[in-house]
Length: 237
Image (cartoon, helix red, strand yellow):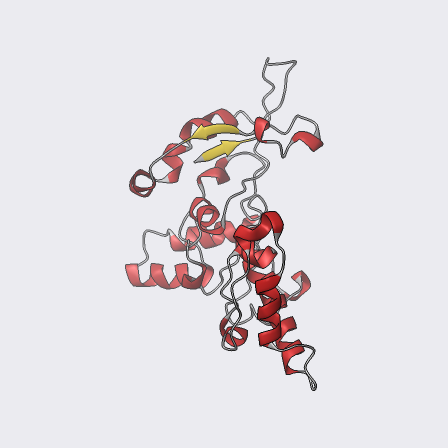
């Protein structure tokens, strides 16, 4: 499902459901068969008028500001690998490697992707002279499968126009790691601040009110090494 929001409204109204407009509904099988660019073709054709003054509502100028979606959907549209585990450089914003992900926490420690560099990567993996083996190698190295259909829109930079997915990247990523490390620190102190039994008893007996449906699951010792095994809503709670 694709939606769009017109930004020429008051900022405080932009998160309201009533300003979210349906653009298209497509079966995922058809999306895989015909490509996302075919679905968005009418939208792209209309938005190509970017920079051209239209005699609509006192000569408005139209352009695409950004695209928000979950990580796999955004990666599919931008031309990256949907599964971030399949790329040596999985981030759409920078060139951090999988090995560095657990060690690098500042933007200043990595090389950021930019439009020119990304275009070179796209040209590299789509070069018709490449063998299938070499294409797969370069694709995994850069994390890039091909060109983004939105890149032809004037003024739109695919390395800046796809903000990160807060649910997967923040809540199930950094927030999970923070909670897990904090709990590990507390139970491994000497003496411990609390035990896992005490924590699970508190989780079981807490009055959650309207958050009851997102009640956290019990935390076991092996979860402190392998992940807390909570949903995004449970982590938030």
